[in-house]
Structure formats: C-alpha cells, structure tokens
Image (cartoon, rainbow, N blue to C red; front, side, top):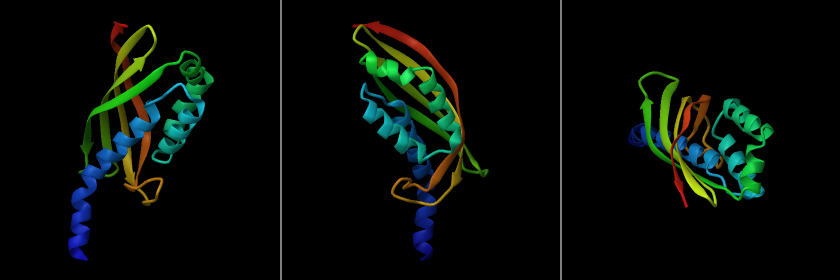
Length: 149
C-alpha cells in the first residue's frame, strides 16, 4: 500500500499539468458547430470552479460563439508550458499557450496566458486527475501575428 501511495504522489505534478492542459484544450478549442462547442465547454467546466463559467457566460452574451459559427471559424489552442508551484497549497499555476484562429481569409496567432489555483478534489470519469481549478483568470490574450491565406 505504501508503494502505491508513493507512486500516486510522484505522479501528482504530471496529473496537475495534464488537468490544466485538458481544460485549456476543451475550453479554447472551438469549431463552427454549436453542439461541439457546447460539448467541449460542458466537459471543461467539470474541471474548474465558477470562475471559468463567468468567462463563458460573458463571451456567450457578447456573441462570441455565434460569430465562430456564422463565420465558419476554427480555433485551436496549444499549451506550451504550465508553471506549477506544488510547494504551497492551494497550488498556483500559470499556463502559457498559443491560440490559432483560422478564418477563410487569414490565420491569427494569439498569445494566451492564464492563471489559476488548483485544489485536490474527488476523481471521477469527468475529472480523472482529481483536481479543481479555482480563481481562473485570463492574464493575456493578444494577437501575435496575422497571416493572410
């Protein structure tokens, strides 16, 4: 039993980074399909507290998702790195990622930096790593370059 618990604790940093990476992939990767957007957002919200839901609500109210659909826009995200402090609980994480917004006329590359705290929670099918992200906040989301197609 001791060996099993040691293996689990050694994997916690890997699981924490994967939890954060998975959230970003689900929350920020969007296709021009309403049901796909809703499915990804629903799955992402199992991994985080209400702080990300507020971002979702705000973007929905401003018509962001409708513009994705009507403009036939694809958005992908690639997480470059996750800076994680596991020495102090709740664990603080800063995520550095790149967004690609693909339109018929151009491709916009954006820099995305987010911050959150991670707390331990119950593992489930919807949350296999057993973390919950708290106080999610977008620190930076700016255009890096636009490439014509």
